[in-house]
Amino acid sequence: MSTPWPEANAILDRTALPGIPAATFTTFGARGNGRADDTQALQNAIDACHGAGGGRVVVPEGVFRTGALRLRSRVDLHLSKGTTLRFSDDPGRFPAVSTRYEGLECVNRSPMLYARDATDVAVTGSGTLDASDTAVWNRGDDREGVLEPLVRRGLLGDQRVVVGRLRTAMLETLGCARVLIQDVTLTGSQFWQLHPISSVDVTIDGVTTWDSGANSDGCDPESCDRVVIRRCSFGSGDDNIAIKSGRDEDGRRLAVPCRNVVIVGCQAEGRFGFITCGSEQSGGIENVYAFGNRTYGRGVGNAVWVKSNSRRGGYTRNLNVSGFRGRVRKAAIAITMKYDDQSGRFPPAFEGIHLSDFAVDGAVAALDVEGLPESPVRGLIISDATFTDVVGDDNVRHAEVMRRDVSVNGLLRP
Image 1 (tube, rainbow, N blue to C red):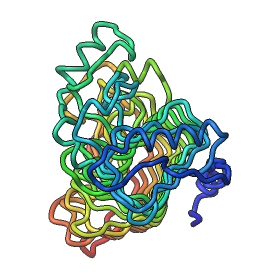
Image 2: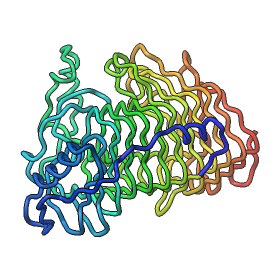
Image 3: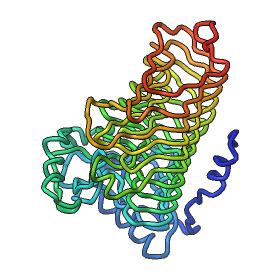
């Protein structure tokens, strides 16, 4: 699917898929009866495939109870039709690994599927990843009380151990290259569902996620370069697609932006933003293109939500969204530099936000935009947009806004 932007089409062309050898491997005695612990058999198959130079590990139909699985280079973990990986209620099956929690480096229990510093990594097939049973142990959301004191003490990421005190994501790739997640369904996640971190050439294609409660974001690429998200159906209890780059001083220290992101042909339902930038954007976000996306079911909170504050700082620039259709329950376009009522010495910069060809129904307001006096939102252009059944007025403060052929409840807006 092409887009209206040559720059976005170039990203689509340049984002490399993993090179997976043609060899096929079985699951080495995994029983798939829904009762036996198949962790070791599944991991042995992945490791053997990797050791032999790579290929596809085919998991047959069945319910496989498992702990965390470590994904390896040049390996495609392929879930056949009718296959479910049901992740364990035993926290001991999820060893400590390096990760990020809400934009801060730390050591936590492993995500359900995890890869680190791997190349050519894939999870494919029409099967299901089910983390429902992890609800008994995958708990904890007090980042301010648990993790931030470790940051303030000057500890580095591998010294910030939060095992058992903060939740972990469901599928995570850290420092990887050429990643493909395709066609699988994710359910029961207690935290962010898809979380690529510091990875290059990431493709999320045809994936389905389900709302499983608070903070169950659909897909949160963080500090990545060249990310393609297409043909996906996102259900979430929070943001559907949240583009991130680290929090506060940690994000500024690492200084790795998230950039060159293309989102095409997706649908979403959820409480908050369909396409969001932030709020953890201290390393910066740039060159984001979203085309031909829509809501389903109850719709979403916001079509577009850009959020930071002067404690987190960072920037969002060159954000382009076109061809959006659907129902919105909050402001259709929300932009704030006062997110979470936090403030500090690092005012964010939002500039070059171009939104066109919108058809949105049911919003509280078309625009809710608030910059800062010292850092106004610059270059916000909205064109060829129709907003219907809007119940309230726009709120625009400290922002440069240009409207072209924008209609709200049948009236053209200047």
